[in-house]
Length: 222
Image (cartoon, rainbow, N blue to C red; front, side, top):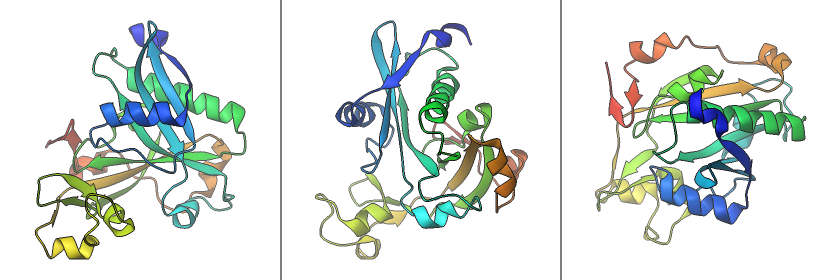
């Protein structure tokens, strides 16, 4: 673990988390419905933030684990860490956050998160942190806009200040295209018994390469 063991993770305000995520996350975007916000500190310097909250399609995701209450799971919405943090920082901060959630919110049985193997990576951090892989699918939700920026199609459908002229369908007809790639879904069980109620198969990690979904730091690999 090295110097990563000296990292301190503690709750921070939503405003602070949003500011950090906008600065450090590859998308430059925050998740508006996040509810839990953790700051990452080393030697008194802030080096990142993690945001947890409900999934966008909460009712659908809830059914991944039978018997889950509506407030019985969380999604890791954003994790943004500075490049200067030491090796193994990602797994360290995830581990601490999960311990804090288990201790303070015992009704939370599991945490879901998604890897963007279209722009970022295939989830090596989650695999190293004890998550299981439950889905690999082609990602048809990330759109390349006419000005070269990227945005999730659901955001266009909700409406944004910059792209207020039309929804995703409108922009697909006016120069926007879907970025090719994959989205991977991972789940961590805070309550080990919940794993027995999983309603979808656990996929072997080798399936990522087999399906051509491997990506590291935004670059596909074979």
